[in-house]
Amino acid sequence: MGSIHSNRSLFPGLFIMIGLIFLGIFIKSAVVSLKSYDRVVTVKGLAEVEVPANKVIWPVVYKEIGNDLSVLYNAINQKNKIIIDYLKSKGLDESEISVAAPQIIDMNAERYQSQPSSYRYNITSILTVTSDKVPLVMNIISTQSELLNKGIALTAGEYQYMTQYFYTGLNDIKPQMIEEATSNARASAEKFARDSGSKLGKIKRANQGQFTISDRDANTPHIKTIRVVSTIDYMLKD
Figure 1 (cartoon, rainbow, N blue to C red):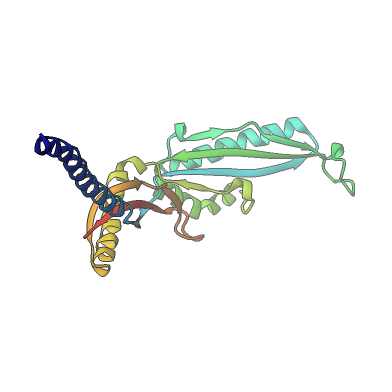
Figure 2 (cartoon, rainbow, N blue to C red):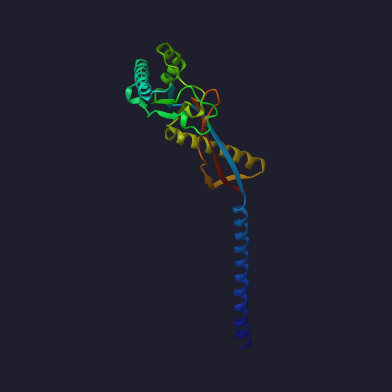
């Protein structure tokens, strides 16, 4: 009877001991996994490309001054027609040219006019060229002095009337740029892993990054620099 009772009391203790052993193994495994999970390297990959602008907005601006509004309006209408005919002769379509209502300043109504003006009205006329024929428009801009022979002096140098160049084909080049940025990031991560005696694991987290489009420099606004920086977290393993 004593032997049977002893065996019965031994079994619960044996089970508890086996349970503790397995629990220890599981805890160790969890710690190792957690330690491995925390081993992460964060890298950035840059992709950059230069592209020519494929859209241009060119404000064609001139001013008229005088005292008789009806005379000024007739002069503006005549000059607008001369400019439109000139632009069309250079290869632009009339649909690419828009004419805004003239901006009129009554000099007599100017509160901050220090001295009386010899003329009453200062009128600004703006025609806007919007085109995807960027090289053609650039050539017209470079030869716009030809309008002087037609009695029209265009206004230049004012910030609000600056020519603007755009690139609208970003969606066409996004995939290859993201691929390049990701490849560059992985190359950096692989080098880090080798230098630290580790191996590169799976991606833990990835941020595509924001695309930016900017002028290459102040002198060539018609050439755009597009860049994206992707940020990727890679797991490291032994």
